[in-house]
Length: 182
Image (cartoon, rainbow, N blue to C red; front, top):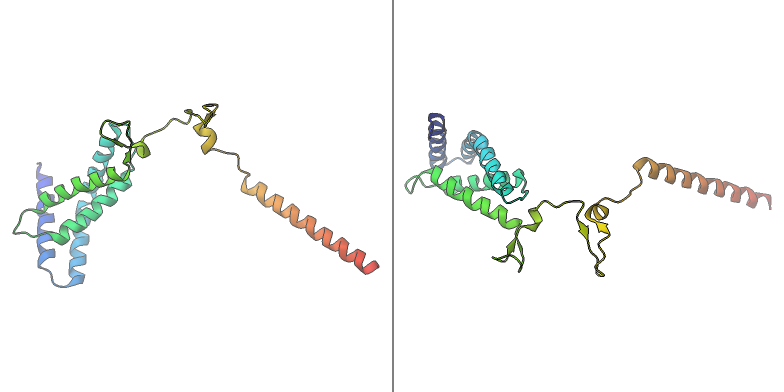
């Protein structure tokens, strides 16, 4: 471990010890905020590593999912930290591993075709050109045909609604004019 990393964890450990000893809730919040700010870059780095690990399996798991899980794990680690039982770094490392596994499980699906019965199809990149077959086995439709469909623009919708409103108002005026003449 390099010197700046040692200094970071030493500072974080001291903040965690102060957090444990603090009795005032407001002081605890300030200490945790300082601890969180110091580890924010570390959390981002861990999340980036987790995303790269997922990409090795051709999976696309958003970095934000890992960051969120790590933030929650850090909070739980600091709340449950007991300086007499070990170091905060060990606890955080363990909880981050569990948090990464939890994020992976969110993208896990069951598939009997896989050797271990698990698939991560929800996180797998898919080609928009992949043909989809219907119940008859016809594969003339691609994934892009399902996802991207023609929608009128907001401007076209507004103009259409405006034209319809004008048409109804003109009809109402003519009808009123006819009623008055009879």
